[in-house]
Amino acid sequence: MPKDGRKVSSKVVAIGLAFPIILVAALDYSLNDSIPNFGIEELNPRVANSALTAFILASTVLLGNMFFYGESRNRPLAPIFAMVIAVLVGVLATIFFINQGPMLLEENGSVRAQLVYNIAHTIVSITALSLSLLITLGILFSVITHSPSKISKSYLLVEEE
Amino acid sequence: MDEILEAALLFWLPLAVIPLGVWFSQSKSSTFGARLGIVSSLIGLGFVLSSPWTVPDSPSSAVGHLFGFILGPSILMLVGLFKVAYSGNVPVGRLPSSDRNFGAILFALGILWLSLMHWWEITPTLSSGELNPYWLIFLPNFLLSLSSISMAAGLAMIVYGDSRDKESKYLFGMSLFSILFLLCAMNFDSSNIESTEFRKYVWLSIADIIGIAIGSILAIFSFASVIFVYEKSLPKPKSIPAPTEEELSRVSRIIKENIGGEE
Image: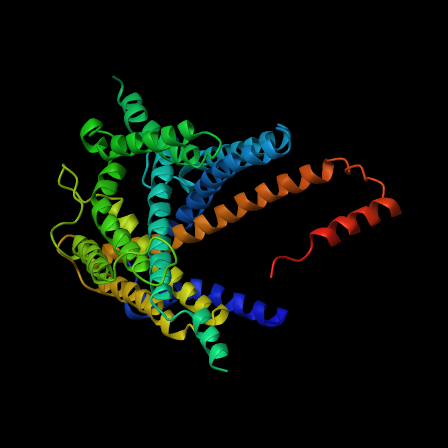
């Protein structure tokens, strides 16, 4: 496939990823009235808390990968230290922002309660994402293994010729 | 024991052991380490699932309660899909063709079970009688991500695959099912959840998914930056001298002697 064609294809797949979310939001926005006592003030802290917690969790997972990377480089500690600093920056940024009053404090009374809630919330969200990914992969493999093989088909055509 | 310490020992520590165990189980250098990883993950999962009984006063135990509720339908769906996939045209480990229908039934039962957990009386409810708050986070997130990932996978099959239009219809069907489920739940009350409440959680889930995407991209970016900076700081490897004429002719002779095969 030409390079430009591949670029367009990637964009189509990326749009497909966002399309259902935009569709559901647009349909709800146009079909229903606004939700009482709920607006952008409730959504913004969720985006910020979710981004900060996902950064900490993803950095911690990548820190594990950094260990293997360090091993392949005769165990230099420099990249591991750098990633530990990245995780610490995430943790400190979260504590700093939650401490700035009710800005990121959702329905929780203290910084510690909000931190624990953020982690539990993100774990549940990541579980939901992982389960949906596994189901999609399962359906994908099921339909591929139950469709006629493209290799044997083309081989048969060559044989017939 | 202190309530916080109890929650840390009986819930958070076992929860942290699960991914750590999975990480160790991937070790190829030590069989003992891999087995220890699997066993510790299972023990950790057992502790997390039993947290509603071991730490009932901790709000975090609601996560263990949710995991207990979704474990059944998740296993049914995944085992069902495994049976369908491996009863098809696979080169190794092929299951009997009758497993295809059995797997499809298991998958449908899993979906039905999960749907009834929203629409019927079997919604995850805590011992205090209130609805598990994490269920209202899990379900919209699951449906939104399922619709998005299925749609993207269906489109990827069309644009990258070779005449896979027919197969992609199943993925578009899954995506459509998820969108319709969401829209129904956002407009009709179920036996335990009001549609307005569900709508609120769907919007929060959209915010959640955007936040997770931003946070993960930032983490990957910082990871790549660390490797880039470190690799750049390394000294260049010493170059070896080019092969001499004598070495080149020797290599040519060895290749000539070994090339070809028995007819």
